[in-house]
Length: 259
Image (cartoon, rainbow, N blue to C red):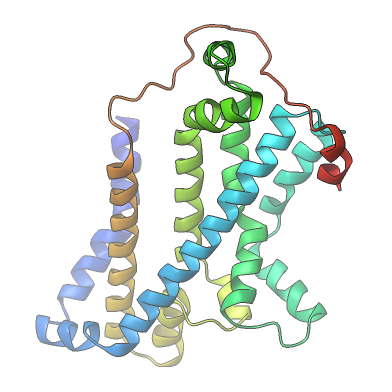
């Protein structure tokens, strides 16, 4: 009952958007929709989401691996430090960057700011998954002759796949919805274009159409993630309750990894 009420409340803005957009009439919607500007905004928004998601996945998974599955010095300290970017709004981070670096604007600066602010969305669930993974499956893999690193790549990461996918999806959705960073570093994405159309250009219909396209893109993104999930895959712990995970020695790379 509570979940249904939450979903109903969350759908209120979507229903309002659909009603208001339909009031403009199909001819006006088509004129606003099938334009080069909408295509450019869609391409740039999706490209930014793809770049940031890929970078956040690499950083988040790598940091989670170092903190939970290696003998990295001061692992707990780094675990807390890696989550701190969530406390910094993207517009604050972007303002700090443009105040420090000359001509800090454009697509790649926006990707940098969003990556550094968003990778904890991947790090936190993946770190939890790696810390609570099933050591029994890894031990079976090691007993069959696979080395520690091969076991991690073929067994451990497969167990953490749902956490990795969920974190990556959160990052992609966050990037599509972000307004602060892209507005400060001057990148035209859907959010900035919607704000400009509604508050500066007084183009209510254009803003509604762009908002609808953005909602459709997010729905397609969520649907795509659902379709890529492995059917019938099992990720639950099947043994070894209470045992700590296997930690891999970094050896000579221990202090470089900390640096």
